[in-house]
Length: 457
Image (cartoon, rainbow, N blue to C red):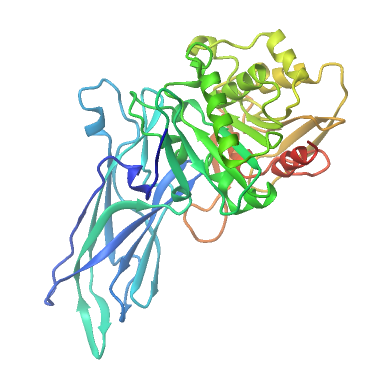
């Protein structure tokens, strides 16, 4: 096994920054520009750029109109000769939301709805784009160096051709020969807990590229578990975020279950993890994989948070929809399970997925129910068994028609400090789990419930 670790230069296969500046009467100097990314609920974006004018300099007269930032995201090189179509390539002028100046540092903040570092392909995969940023200085700035003040100053800018992301950089890319690649997070302090994440179908590998990055950047399904909140709740935890070599629907025929189990066992042994403190979570196709893992290894996981498990489409996508007998066997597992899905999921049928699994697990038991209302995010109803081993949270969609309904979320994409309501696909219910939003009937958040299940072992 070979471990590859470094900065997030792997985000793009060829990230070139072309920078220019409008000429004025002053001699043009060159300054460093860095691009920074953040992983939103909809994936990683370049959300700001930072210009360093050098130690001792003082910059002023900079506002939202000082720079025009032209961004191109392209998969043309990667898809050359292929019939695959990219639905995520773009060429835009980035929307500048605000500018912050602190002595020699200028930070330009962009709208987070733009500037994605991944594109969605017709092969149902998220894949890194090649980025090209052209920055034009539209008007003079004031730059003071020592006792000299230039009142009409322009410059050329240089970039080191990488996107820096603090959250993503915490993870190490682990490449496993003849196995399943994964991203790995090790907490600063030794831990006894391991969190395993199985991504959705869109984050699988594309064309055997071995990129091992889409599951890290396409949504918060990987980085959420390394967040300060999650680490505090789980008392420090290692994180494994696998990337399917093709798709999790091939779990049975391609021995993905056995391979994932072997790699989990290896990490448990290497880091001294308590086998009774293994947490499982997955979404969509990863929810299918999670379900299959529990069926195959009933004593491996103490607790699971499964989001919109794609059970109903498995047959059509190369897998096997679990039988009633297979789902009933989960009741003999020690795994406590919390299921999350939209009331009317337009991609995988809620009745045949989360509701089917919950009904199977709770057959013959009484359940308690409570509805929660939220200001910006969708309302939801949680049902649970008396012993709180099995729970189901269903989020209200904007329309009962599966083809029309949306789920609602609170976002701050214009970076002004105020949350606004955003609507996404009614399939994206995993966002709620990754935000620790679902609550039990008695008001316990999903992450705290999961952590409490570990304490009981």
